[in-house]
Image (cartoon, rainbow, N blue to C red; front, side, top):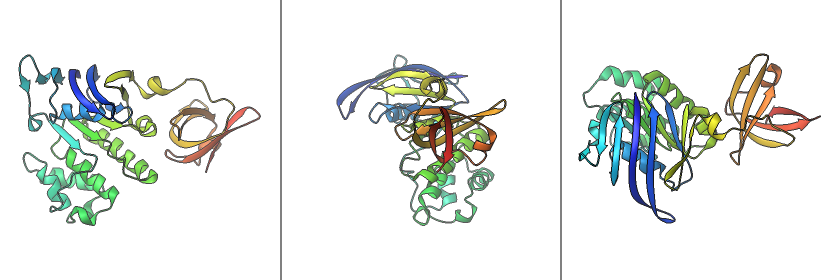
Length: 291
């Protein structure tokens, strides 16, 4: 089971005309991030996957079904692609309640699915509210629930957390990870936040100037396997991995540098993913401290 992409599309970026040229195979069931700078082609590729933008040429196949083929003149409309799409601005219907927004997304009304999603995302007390009565984080959860309402095989997320503050981003990253695990949809996430990528992704596709520059696991694409040397830096805990009698703490700095620190249980006991920490050296040993 795979997603096979081989497409070309001329597009306009901030720097002028650019050719989007993507040729890759991705595995179904993964949480895949399209990572790169603004204007690189990430969102255009996501919209091509959704059927909202048509490539100039090429072939797109998802789980054995052809969604686009320029030679055979195949171009399935979005409603036939089995997708759920979460837009950057959420795009909730302002005149509908939470449960009405979810129901509208379904091809066939399924009240049990709506109730399951409302319970999963902690929206029960807001189910009769309209978007104007919701906070930014609540709107994000509604938008994510709506994208899952029609039981999609492919969940497409276009920078869904970019408008949220740091603590809310961390909380909603957990929601996305949980939704991916619970509902089983292959997830494609557009992001240029390395901490988000490292926390959520099983596979990363780096896109620069319309092409793929790197592809693989976050560790393979971004990390240096060496442990941090002598320096002092502030960052955010992305992951804590237990290895035998020690822990490997992965910290991402504000400049998107990845730092790995060996720490004993006493040092990591107060830490959780998303905490801001100071990493510094003392007698040549790296020390990590929550701030």
